[in-house]
Amino acid sequence: MGVELTAFFSSGDGWAQPWVLDTELVESLRFGPPAGHTDLDVAIALTRLLHHDFVSHGTDGKGRHLDDGSVPIVIKAHRAVLERLALEPPSWPFRSFDGPRGFGTYWRDNNMSGSWKARRDCIEQLMGPTRDALEDLQELEYERRFTKGPSGSFKNLIFAADGAKPQIVLRDAVNNDVEIVRNSDNCLVFTDPLPPHGLTWRQMVAWWRKKHQPDADEKSAADALYRRLYRSLDSPPEQLLMITYCARYAEAGGFDLPALIPQVYLHYDPYSRRSGKQSGALYRQRMDFLLLAPDRSRIVIEVDGVQHYGIANPPDEKGRVTHTAVPRLYAEMVAEDRRLRLAGYEIYRFGGFELTAPRGERILTDFFTELLARHQKPAL
Image 1: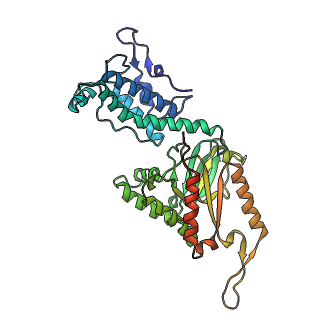
Image 2: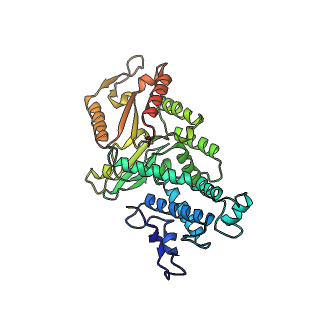
Image 3: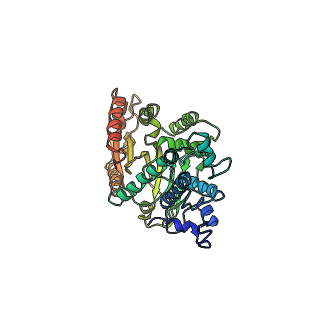
């Protein structure tokens, strides 16, 4: 259920001041939604409030809920909620209705004085993209109820260890609280809110800039993040897979592709809860690569070397090492695939051998072209 606009206000005196903003409540929205509601609920309500009041001020001035003092408070809360949803907030050229930084001054300076339509169009251009993005999220949230993808809230994404692998302990299976008890400095941890439409390369770069390179521009930060992710890969087939996919980031619209995340330890609430354990080490939780696609698919890509299904024999007289197939290793691998599929993940496996062949790059290029075409954002 959505948030009603009246939830942000007290009743006032009912006459001269029928709308009095609950400043304490609105300030609290910068840190999280009220109990019983989601950030999406709040974002929709605040967008509707700001759009309505600025349109009203730009036309007949009637029916406004806010005044010049309360508008900046609502704009700040609106920005914070949208950023938690990984959406771009409007870039406000004014911060109040009247005064030097007001909408009235802005429209007079930009030749809108004689036209209500021009002023309404100005607000639509400013806030329309936000409203449309929120409607897309609403539709995806509605569709999610009828899909078989992973359920539960995203909580921890631990990935790209470039040294000794992290040792992760599940402290509380009910709340999915995990702790990296060893080698935490070697890996990256993404805890930003994950929007329903997946995780793009642009969003990953924005997270990296915020956490690691606040003074870098987007291109420099993207290059640094790519190099850091690449260092986590051990084998030439894995490296080829990442190089081939990430070349797409340089193409038109490439930053809005799903991010390819290597060496992933991923935890969804129901996914971990099925273990029935309250604490203990997490076994076999690492995935070679993960894509969080815009259609809500969770795509796991594995690159299997011979160690996945065989053990090394002693070197022969010429120093060559062969391997013996081990049914137990193969059985463990396919059992893990079944478990992940039942949890809602889509899994693709490559044999390391096929990626070391001359056609390895072409195989990957064709695969990713088909995969991305299959998992586009649903049409509304």
